[in-house]
Length: 574
Ligand SMILES: [Fe+2]
Image (cartoon, rainbow, N blue to C red; front, side, top):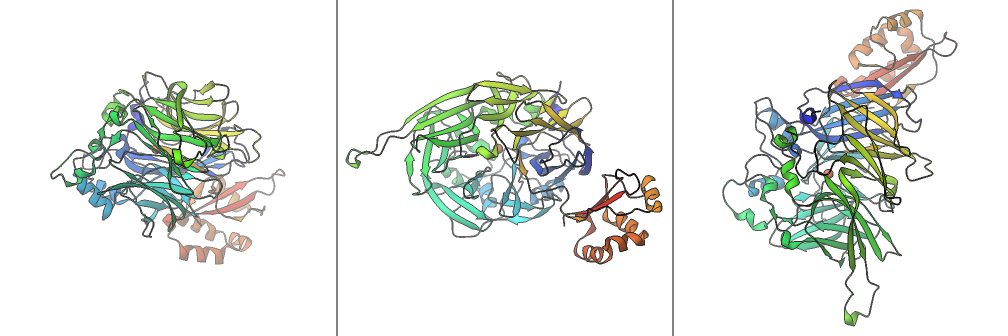
């Protein structure tokens, strides 16, 4: 098999309802929104070098259990980076292109990089696509259309580099974020976000040479900053001339070890800074406290060194040379000493680490219901160690029992699995796991819904396209396929309209049509307008929205008597 298709450039945008084989649970009514690189090649013949530099594309999977369908949509974010690339002016990102660090940071200051291809996150009532610059992109979750750029302009200290992953505190609902500020004295700034412009400062931690930091850990009391020995000397800002791409400017300095800063969220002080052996990684999986807060436990996915960044160059990925890409799930336990007489100083914490799963993994996740709490299960892409090819399975690891179950099937390759807990979950694994896979032979992606407990296939749908492998997804329970049912009770459908539907003249079961088409259909049947009181509604609707932004669909389904078909209309993006 050949995973090269997972790194192809997608050129189409699609919105389509697809039917489900199997059965969706009736509570699965929200949307999974995934983010990742959608295209790597540009019209002028140029291309990016690294997987992380592909242009941001959102994919949305809205589940409709009552129809056993999934509404699928993919859309490129119309960012400045996207527009520049279309004109042949893409100036590089994470690992592509030759640029000066000064130029890169200058653009961070003046008009920061906006290829926000890593994850989608909800902040307050708004949705944002995020990357490692402080410039995020707001989008409409129902159309995936980019709304505007967002940059914070308040008093809380921020930096030029941004941890792409926020952590949500389930108790307060706040998001916690970490920035790195480069300067004469470089600092990591930790802050809470309650709404886009409402931030509160938690702590700032000074560092001699900032580490590359893609994520961090969070417990009820602590923020866990992990300084891997991939460091950047801020004095490089003064170096003239063109230099290597951004990530290449970081130095691997194993003699520093891996420094863990346990930062107290209440006092803003560092509680402990144990040092581990030199390792590297991107993702903290989850963290929690036990023993009345005296023990801090966190799981992190690590690789031996920074060579995994080399493995992620597209040339290597497409050739199947995956090098050191497979990660190891590692548990770190920090046992804090009890408070002692301050005259003798605090006792050093005892820190231990262990590998909790022997084989390789990528993009590990836990149930959102367990964030900041003790978790029993970890889900991840399953990779052989040593790695021979892209993930051909996804896995569920039970930490308590030290057992692992894998799922493979329907597709050849898989991406990050996302666990969605059921609303009345009895166990930590009561729910489903949603994963997108790629069938190489037919050149189609599938979305698969696995039973969370048995880890067997429950439902799947073939998508109309082959999606490139992406990075991260979030499930949003309140983002529905249909945002507003205009009418959901049964109304009589005339013989004429039923015949029109049968002949595919603009109305379809479970399908949807663009506004102008359906508009003409609606107004061709005046009785509809009267029956549904659509005239004033439609008039207001068309005045407020451009047709391309809104979609109107309708369902006609015959009821059990086969005499009174039911008509439903919905207005997406409304
Ligand atoms: Fe990530």
